[in-house]
Image (cartoon, rainbow, N blue to C red; front, side):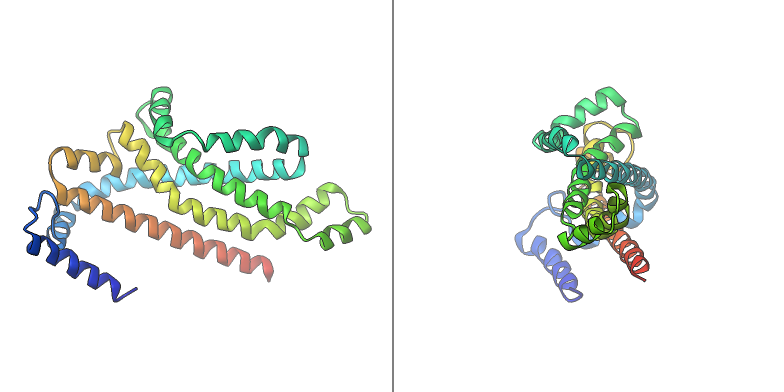
Length: 240
């Protein structure tokens, strides 16, 4: 991995020179690094807005996904009624929902947070729900033999056993959450990395657009790393 990054940078630097590709189509890494330094304040301002949207969406989706998965796992009626609706919500293209959310919630943070929640809600809910219904049968039979109630089985056996699945859903959500915020910003916004990408593209500032993409990739990788570390430490603490 460490050797791959310098190699990719070298290829990126050589390709425009060998092919004669103009900088406004494919800027070299030196131009992108210069854009990162020149526009670092502008990038930081828009990055902060996107981070707020992502974290707010991740927080709300985690709560909604947790509650929904427990409801589906604890009630067959709720599962039969709501599960098809959850699946149907994933059929609708996200780009079709973004303009509607912007129309309903405006051009502020709300529509971007809602878009983020919609994209990552299903992965969180489905992974936790799958983990809840896959509790080992031997544990459930033992709990029934000892006279445990349905709620006791849920909160003392099924939920603790499903926490690794919930952590897996959060790690997956950490990858998709930035995409939700960016899609919302592309449709309608005045701040954020997605807005800055469109602005740079419209002004033919390809180096700034590449710099924004690199910032977004670094943000996604950092968010996934942080969520992974926190979830692993939490699971280790639970085991201890």
